Length: 151
Image 1 (cartoon, rainbow, N blue to C red):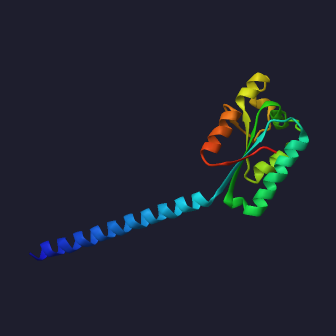
Image 2 (cartoon, rainbow, N blue to C red; image 1 turned 120 degrees about the vertical axis):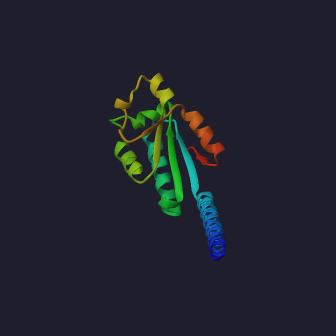
Image 3 (cartoon, helix red, strand yellow; image 1 turned 60 degrees about the vertical axis):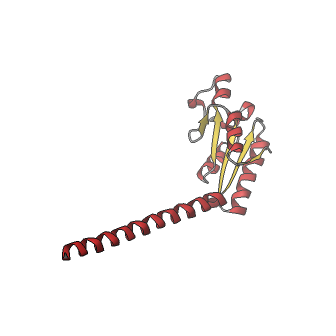
């Protein structure tokens, strides 16, 4: 009889601990979702091969990070069409793009444009990323709630 009572006590304590762990896990998930919901997200389109447009975009990105905080905003720059020329190895704004990448900005090149212009990854700045279609990337980001800016 003594063992049955001990077992019931143990089982009750175990169930209470599991409930508490589940509650803490749910609370942690809710806090994480709240943090993610308050994080700002912005995507920039660059489809011009004008260094001034890239400089403007990179200045806008830096201003946003300074105003909001690097750790509170996700920023992506999507380059396609003639804008992809600024992502080539010998780009006039290459050092500024490297700085933006180091600051946590995601910069992507459109593979459709690269194919059309007969460019390969070997022709491009080494740290950028790639997407199948720049236009589709912009669409998807906007569908996911990202703000859209085209300087």
